[in-house]
Length: 357
Image (cartoon, rainbow, N blue to C red; front, side, top):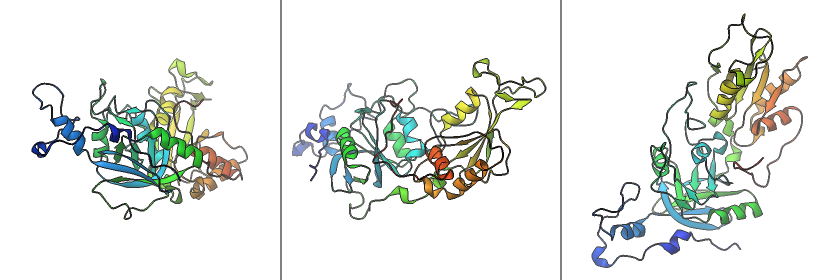
């Protein structure tokens, strides 16, 4: 049996205050600055009063820590990410829908969360989608006081706004080793004084059509800025460094992208860097009669076999007498394989991070 892992923070917390100080109001380091006239006993009291939380795995393993963000419980598939930075992007990546994200890098939250500013395309400039998609986040050391010129709020405040629970003080690398050794595992984050553990069951997100949950509902068209007049455009493809749109004879290249959980930066790259006209459609949109120069199949969460409609539409395009180029990334690559007649299967665990070639 696996040994129960206790959070490092449990062993480092301050001893309990004497009875005469038990009624002293605790402080929150997210809203209280040290120094000045602060009562030196306030921080130890706050440390003692922190709400406890646990990461409970389906095999019975328990990792204990402390709650931050939304004070609620959640269940999902436990996965890990090895990136040292990029938690605002990871948390808003639709590919994490239904999952509990364990971040292996020990310090998280130190540069806060940026603003909800939008770019020229109308997309959230600092995030990969409109909201956080994962079920909960698990970290080792949480930075209550961020320090970065773009920070507009703390990670805890952002999680609270989005009603996503977080737990810190967990040995995240031990969790990662367990997943690597035993494969994907279901789990739940339980907050002390929240829903009883037996009341919140384990939940397998792969049983649902997650692409349908994260995909946009309407067709959207994105055009590169300063489009050339068709009559004045070059008949050859123009390199992105020239700042001009990519063209085919007489017009701008038109790419149709199927949104199974597409990230904002994919749209930005295709439009602003490759300078194409981009039409983004919902996951179940019938594009078999549409005209386009290339078909892009996006990333997304869950089991690709749930996207039966999409697979059928891809197959129909592949069977055209002169099919356009088709590019699939992540889930989109699996959809392309299924449309070609191949089979897919779930890997033992996924490699998520920024350090893969």
